[in-house]
Length: 138
Length: 138
Length: 138
Image (cartoon, rainbow over all chains, first blue to last red; front, side, top):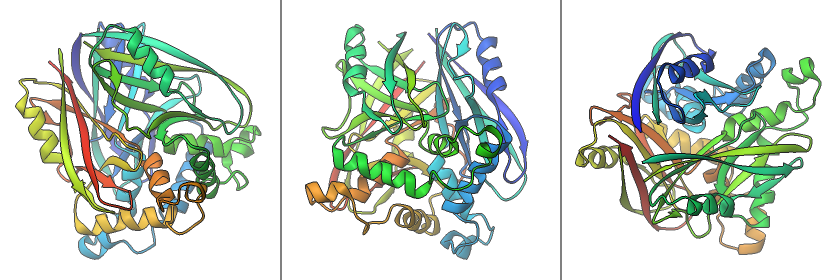
């Protein structure tokens, strides 16, 4: 059993939803580990990780759901103090969560055919992101 | 330290919320591992895993909350393209998440007395589900 | 590779949002493990764990979002049966989730500068909480 810590670097813009499945899968294949878990984690409080069927309709639908549930233009106390216009970004990120754990077996992530791992850039400006992928396995 | 990958097979119908606590607990006891984590993962983009106090009132309440927050009958772009009527299923699944990690110690899951692990079938048709339970421990 | 199971004890009141970052970080440093994961888990169905930028504005904003999305004063079937007034607590907890996995490297949690680990007391009465922190690493 061993632990390997890797990164995925992304240049993002506001609202980006990025399919990182191939990146994570490649990092797993690059190890000589047969089975285990990949923990994908965003260091930062305005990004999130989950899974979705990665097709343009659903990317619009999840953006619409975020806007409906945590609208950009309601009053945020964060805004009153910090004036960076991203109160909604933080709240969305806390609800979706910064961490996802995906098992792998026979050197492959165990995902559904129509299930991709996504990073959601919820901040309101371009960011350089350095996602952590920590692989624990044997 | 070792890794064991197991499955829980379920035949589900739309809206099912299934208590899988005993199944996961039994899989942990079937190993000879004393302490570690059980990662429960649904391969697929229209199911989710979380915990709840498993009693009929709350099962209705969580279904009601999902319908209130991500209604079935609003417009989904996924629907416009794919016509399978399950846009809401995907969005609900992405918010709740496909993965749950539960620690165990002394061969038992560390859960609250009134806390059960549930699988939520969010799709709009019967499904055969094969949940992954990956146990890492020593 | 080894597993260490620790606890964080908290005395909470309704609505508390507690920064547990230092506690988790200290537990990791107290081990002699260099890299791995810390799984933080609440045993109980009315608490949750996520990350946020821990500043007073956002603590109000996330409380407001919870009240807006899963209001205290709508009808809950849980209430009709159990009369303990905390239907909303359970639903909020199931959506936010009881578990968070944070990687560490060089004996330090890999968190953003403005990203703290929080426990949310969602129940409607004071509680004694005993969070699990399970550390797996080498």
